[in-house]
Amino acid sequence: MFKEYDVIVVGAGHAGCEAAAAAANMGSSVMLVTMNMQTIAQMSCNPAMGGVAKGQIVREIDAMGGYSGIVTDTTTVQFRMLNRSKGPAMWSPRAQSDRLLFAKKWRDMLEQTPNVDFWQDMVTGLIVKNGVVKGVRTGMGLEIPGKSVVLTNGTFLNGIIHVGQKQFGGGRVGERAATGITEQLIELGFESGRMKTGTPPRVDGRSLDYTVMEEQPGDENPGKFSYTDTPLLTTQRSCYVTYTSDVVHQELRKGFDDSPMFSGRIKGPGPRYCPSIEDKIDRFADKDRHQIFVEPEGWDTVEVYVNGFSTSLPEDVQLKALRKMVGFEQVKMFRPGYAIEYDYFPPVQLHHTLETKLVKNLYFAGQINGTTGYEEAACQGLMAGINAHLAVRDEAPFTISRSEGYIGVLIDDLINKGTEEPYRMFTSRAEFRVLLRQDNADLRLTEKAFHLGLASQQRMDAVIEKKAHTAAIIRLLEEMSVSPDQVNGVLEAQSSAPLKQKMKLAGVVSRPHISIVDLMPALPALQEQLQHYPKDHIEQAEIQIKYEGYVTKELEMVEKMKRLEDIALLESFNYHQLPSLSSEAREKLSKIKPKTLGQATRISGVSPADISVLMVYMGR
Image 1 (tube, rainbow, N blue to C red):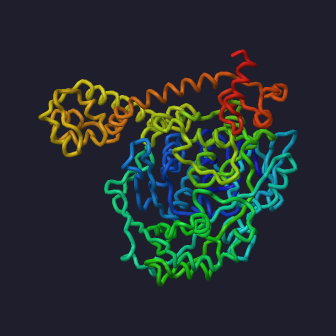
Image 2 (image 1 turned 60 degrees about the horizontal axis):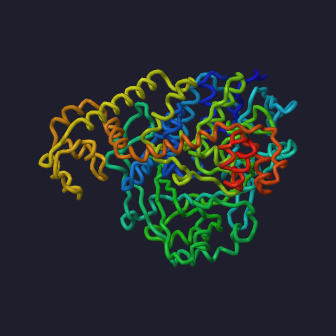
């Protein structure tokens, strides 16, 4: 019934969609198998993309030719650049999306992508012969042959939903769990574990009093995620902020005896950095209130997402507690919050390409690897799709290093350190975050995407032009001198020390809080020379000037790290023959089998002393 596909993608969440798009756009024949064609790219949790570090990932996906940035830009209801008060390395774009339009746009784009076929069914098992995956089996008893398989099962593997004392099988509310795959993978020798995540109640916006809440409007000049010509926002919907209180906490505590989390019915750990409201009350007992974000679900719906109120307490407890919050006194609930427990596979069982070590041409991406978040899932799907395509053509694998992208940081963390709780990306996880800014993802990655066939000539030309313009603007600022009487008014207005003598404009721009845009009205000659450059190219030049010293230091660190990456380790090396290594290092190195000394340095439990032992052994 089915032809043999180059790539079969199991699951059509954020990871599955990006995997299918990437492999198809590179030329592979792709079969995307999903349990429900109506929930492709469903935003199962909050209706938002981006945020701290996550926004950088979405821009990287876009620079690599992925679809997430384009879909977000065309369905955004509010855009905000977070951390504007900090330096540009910390700026993080975030967008509220229209939940229904987001999923519809994703499906439209996939349907318009040549080489993508769809099949609605549950995948219950893999076809594996001699250690190589050969396709999948479905709940209907069908076999779909394929040269590679990407598993992106999300929270569906043996998923159990918890609300108070009630529990029932499901991968998402209203949808059944997926069975069969975990059991087969364990038979094949894989290790599995359980994790938990949760979601808050959805409420009726008509029953809320927004006048007593804090309004949180979008940016006055909203940005966007994609480097393509996606539309800029002209109108936005506000979010709102309210707070819990001691009264709310007392109401919630009444349900703690029925909490699946506290009663031990939930075994898997939940996301540390996005805990449930009952977890917050229990862990942060000294806090008398917690911030709650009231987020619209879209342009034309009254449904509201209560961000910060994730819970699995009984429905009646949830409603009573909500009604104790300011602005929620008359709230009507559309559906209660719930927790979901599901299977995952510790990602130390993967190569950097996200291919499994045990089964050739089998890839894992998304929550199956223990991550949490749409953005983390999407970038893994992108990388798995790219590498599945390359593998079936016997081409060299593609990876992104820690110094090239947050995507590289995420995957390197997962395969070297594993994760025992849902992994979420933060800027603090990246040692080269000055290099990995949201503004330069195209400069870092689009050329790579172009060579893979994921970025068009038009996109490559745009990057070449941006680099040329940026260099020209920097040269102009380094050559143009300004006198105190020209700029001291601007400097004093920004509480910056006035000039005492002439200096190059680049030196003035390198100061904190002084921007080229601020200086242009006082310098007509500068304004005239810059008027033909795009705004983001001017901003790029300014950022590079301000960060020049930091960038130089980080590039030196990158070079040091590369020297260790150039020292190869044999996969067959017997670490147990080196008694000078710590027992934990011997165990971890034998399990993960790092390909380079650089990778070995990033394995949890391998100390600098252990690295020294390896270097001595290798004559270094």
